[in-house]
Length: 445
Ligand code: FUL
Image (cartoon, rainbow, N blue to C red; front, side, top):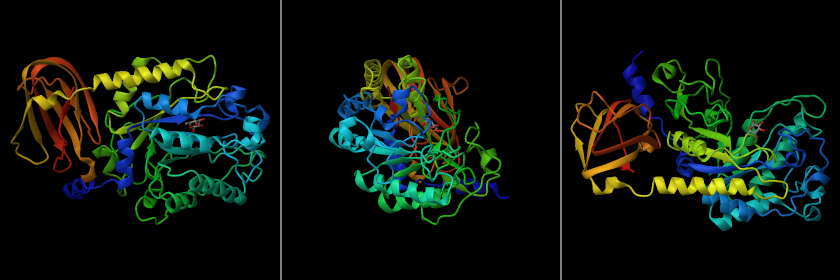
């Protein structure tokens, strides 16, 4: 095999416009809310009585204010979780908010949330669980029609949707049967009614699961991955709906996208990962749980948004329909910390000079400051509209390359490197890349 051609092709796999827009969302909120909030469960049984659902103080503006205070740019609401209870008055089931005491059955929380997002200037998306433990059709062909009808309601009644979130959970329905999900037809509806929405599913097509729910990052995060991992890669661009196959690779793997991993692939595609994690242990609100520490959340932010992925952080409303005050405070602290740590880019007042290198797949940039400064972070970004290319880089605080302050692998959309050193000099050395390197201006904080 001619590996130089293979690697050149790999360097030219580019994102779609909607994937680029999704990357710029960086950090957004997940909202897990359903009957589970009232039963203290994580997975409902589907047998819950809608009469238990009454978040009588619900205030989606409070959610949006909190989300914005953390620096998040969007919200994804569980319109329906595995229990099948719908937060909107779906025409196709009685298992919904319309038979709950909330607003005497006249409420629509999907609408309230979408409107609050619009008012607050953030984007809105939803999670619609294919696994439905309530629906009588589950396990039969009729269920796919039911699901598509519900999906259409959500895609057509609530304004622009930025991200549609599915998961692959597939267990028994009310009469013990399992369902084969018609994902390709679900995606077709999204392409038709919300062509700008990215689709999240375990294995793509537009965004894939990172492989864990704890915010644990990979050493190297590649958005260019073997097509076999992205089951529905073919649906990304041209809408030709052909199912892929997976045999040697899982989304929990560490080495997804590394050269030795992609060289056996049958083809490559662009499919970045999203890290989903809850601010507390559970996805739903449980009185006994506490929010994670500020330190843990900030570190997760650095390791996800700052490592070529987006972070989807869940905040669960309580039984009143409000975010708990502890979560509100933690979100504000997190947003304040992010703002203050990245307040001023001191590279703006430095002398930035590019040094000649022997190859376009290498790059060397020297940044000299007038005086010694404490450098906490260096932020690197590739122009990924041209592809993700960098494989290895060094950050040095002296011209001596032998003892770099930081050794990195991938960059991609954004790489935040923790430096914590006083210096008046910084060298960014891209040591290996799959093609010509296109870096955006380096930021230093
Ligand atoms: C999983 C679900 O089973 C969990 O309840 C939660 O919604 C998580 C985000 O996705 O597949």
